[in-house]
Image (cartoon, rainbow, N blue to C red; front, side):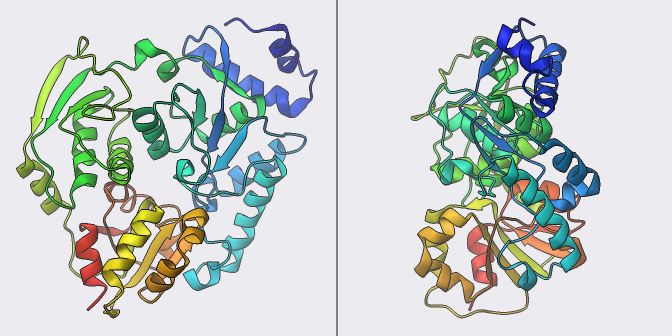
Length: 389
């Protein structure tokens, strides 16, 4: 891989140990994947922010790394393990909070913005078409590549942080146009109401490690958000091409190796298979984080109803969306907790709950594993009916 003289100086440690370590990570990945050069990035999104997922070893890595390191591009952060303002009401203990605070301190000392969300594109970090990024959040990389037309691989937390410090990433994978061609064509013959997340769940299982070209995918931006998140959770790919109005990639089917049709009945069968139980300790909505439009829509449906009780309720969102909808947040707070900075996947819910219902296809993958939950899928409308009367 060719490095400029300036890049070689960084790698030789002439600009400090922190930047040398960061360059070492970026270059090592580039050499592994056969990159020819480094390219500038417009922004980064760093994962590995919850103490639950990175533990004490992760804290040590970040605190060691943060000594002298500063990011060179706009950098936002994935959800933490708690709401920084309402962590006690979530049931999180003080020891967890203390560890989480050290992670927050390390990131902020390096200049990362205190925006803790999986939807940075809804909180100001919204890339333009054709821009190169180093994003680590799986659902966000899919949205950036597929809907916004930006270019990013699914980075790991350390590599995204290293790229942010250098301001560059290695040019391989989805940074190259020739690697963004779809290899499998999937025709959705119909998506029943409320099952968009499961359409993504099923498409991901079919796609595997192949970029899919999806026929008949005419979704709102919020539906693309939930569709892509589920697809990323059940596959190894970080983008899809959709043949309908608004698709940013040319729908070139010349490299398609297989064509698959998905009838609506298959999505209903998937919903039945993920139905789980009918009584839950927790109802969790917002994976990925709820947008302002989603908060407003749920508040509108609940405003004339009363809480049903029986389950704890979390509406997970970003601080940006929370601040944008004060009236609607007030309505939702009557039915449960509107929490920011975190979500049901990376919060320590296993310490508090055993059964969780969600409208998220992504959550159906991670709740049983990371959260040790008996998970139940329900469409959003069904969950709103369940928590109200």
